[in-house]
Length: 130
Image (tube, rainbow, N blue to C red; front, side, top):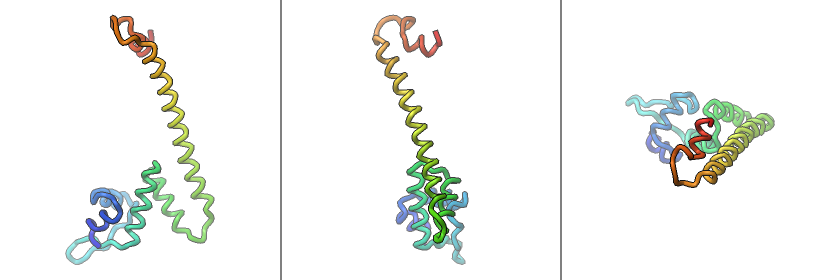
């Protein structure tokens, strides 16, 4: 199949296919004499794997590792679980940071009456370090 059909089946854009191929996440496609790239159903599955991993926040480097691990059919799944645990820890840390930010913003919004002179604004004072 050609790149447009591959992209459609995988649910990604053609530019995304080219990007992932350029960065080695998707193997370089075989080419016809005409220069057109030719892809297989395995490429569709690989792109879907990549797309799902990206949706979970894995980086391209992580995805390369995950793809390598997933190819080891006789291997142990411990390394795959470890990668997912690392990603989960990153997500938990980001959530904690966002909750901290939310708490701080909520406090500032609550403290600000929303009217009056700017020089008395508690948000400006907090951001200015006063």
